[in-house]
Image (tube, rainbow over all chains, first blue to last red; front, side, top):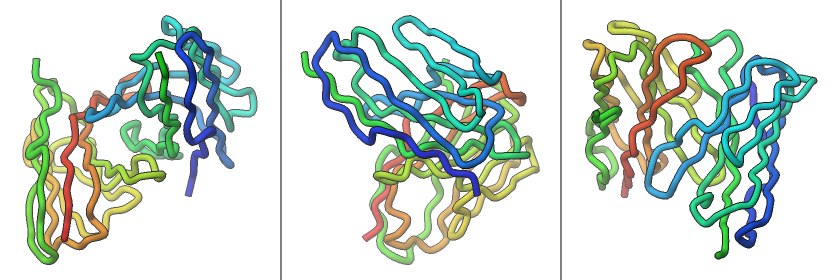
Amino acid sequence: GQQLNQSPQSMFIQEGEDVSMNCTSSSIFNTWLWYKQDPGEGPVLLIALYKAGELTSNGRLTAQFGITRKDSFLNISASIPSDVGIYFCAGPDYGGATNKLIFGTGTLLAVQP
Amino acid sequence: NAGVTQTPKFQVLKTGQSMTLQCAQDMNHEYMSWYRQDPGMGLRLIHYSVGAGITDQGEVPNGYNVSRSTTEDFPLRLLSAAPSQTSVYFCASSLPGPNSPLHFGNGTRLTVT
């Protein structure tokens, strides 16, 4: 089946640094989603991408839908302590309902003040 | 506005016991789904539903049953708990369509001894 590979697995950075993480797949996705999970809570949608090449921002977050439709990137600029959490990429399973998502393995982000 | 409510928050079971994880949403969402989260594996889809009376299997359905008798509720049943089912379980709901994000509950942490 489809799989999503995220890298890096974890990042430990200083407050104010920029962060980059990516997600790759062996198969094509028509939608790329980025979620953030705060400790003890469920994931929350950050950014949704629907078209190859699309670049979308949400505050300090910017995500891109790769041209090949097999990858996506998330950047966080000027990180702050509340950026701590696990970041997941996700996409709908091929031919499945839009709530049938495949999730990446996650990138754990720790920000030191 | 409660959103997606999961109960209980924590549960410890002995091998072979049965239990039901409850999930309710008050947003009149047609779509509901159950995921489990394990370290290093992201979230994996257990079962999902696209409307009352309709359910289907996800990636890891074995050992779990679901039913959807109302739009609001989507309980997950473990008929005979096994240690391999120790995990954090998340329920999610959404409207149909690729532009409708999943709304997650805050999870149930289950330990099977």
